[in-house]
Image 1: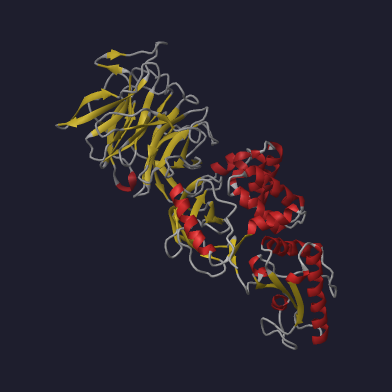
Image 2: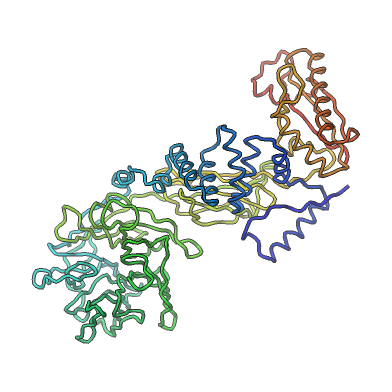
Length: 640
């Protein structure tokens, strides 16, 4: 007979209505050929009867965890940990997240602490404020070579930008000693823009003034240029046509201005429409496609002293509405000096995230949906106990510049050059069916960082292949693979500290499995051995868990008839093994009858050592593992 079974679990957000109907149609065609078992549904029925095992509770917990039903996952993970048996460290992390979902924060913190102790994973240090956090960041990772850029003065020099073969930056070198005025928001001397040619090894030649048409009596700083070099956005005090603009509390705020290069002269200087006299808008940065402008501001809605915002640059020259980048980036402290690399990596300065001291430089990767990954502190030597900010990088040359008032500089702020020595890695692999070894097309592969923040996802090609390019070295990631009718699987990987490729292949187990006459339910339900005590044939508690799986399947399919076959290895005599295996097979049958399966639906026979699956017969030396392959139980479907 042919039976159709509907899957009980689907992953939230995976299916649109169209895709859902399409998959159901395809699934119905498959169901016409076989009866199906939803393994998770079977396990839940077994667990609900009070049977317990690590494997059982891990699979049940994972089924709900990966489905986003953390409150249900908490139930099964609680049962898992109540067994007091060894589990992989990742279960401590998953259980902590599930505990948080039901408000058990103290227990969640304990699980995170244990997870941190077992894995030495950075998430434990960050979330639990481990005391060695600063020491770790302060240790030179060897990823950067940092030197003075060579163009600094005894006054403030900061906020550089690439401009062709030059670097343009702000300097107080001809005003700091005369006016001695500081802007209240930045605490910097009033500055003008200077330019310096990039020489060998990234050192900067002596600087000259950039443009007299840009200069005013107050601040000009932090420029950014379009790729064609004809448009510049820059920061200036609220000062237009010789007039100062002040806020309601009589402070001259900062604004972003736009200038165009006309006949070799910067002209047509206009302030951007989202500036305001009552708050500062400063430090512009452009996205690689030049359709988005990033900046820092203390406008209403800001989380702290200043936040990073973005605004769309429309094709007609107008601008959208500024958007706060949100809590992933902004804190109750200061976030400022954004820069976006060609790889869509956001660099910014902050004193609100965990850092070494003062402003530190952080990096966050932009995800496909426009959100940002958890910020990563660049550590030493880029960051120091002082203020470190205004980081820019040419990712093609792996070099760039940042500003700092660290010890050993020439002035209050200096520009430092750096060469990035970090390596590039490619993470790739193949997703396959565990049983057949065949590749799985359109399996979803998701990459998470060590904080379980999603970094992106891919769908496998016809060969089951997936690739994530430009993965950071010397870091831990989690790779999650999922596909319809398969159990989701997640593995962790630590990327080597050298350039190259890291391969992570994942084989998925079917969770909806076809059965027909001749199917061995032991293989379907992952039952290797029905364990008995030495020379005994009574059913042990751990064997009962596995037998309940078979019982649950037979109750789902009331016309199914099963032949129970018990096998031994070749040790002991033929006669002894045959009698022992036959008693065990019949004991198994009686257990199943006692638990609700009609006797006429079961047959049982012991085969002793007559059906060995390898060459481990009498007198042949074999390992314990090889002998174990012969000690097996089979539950063969002989009628549907």
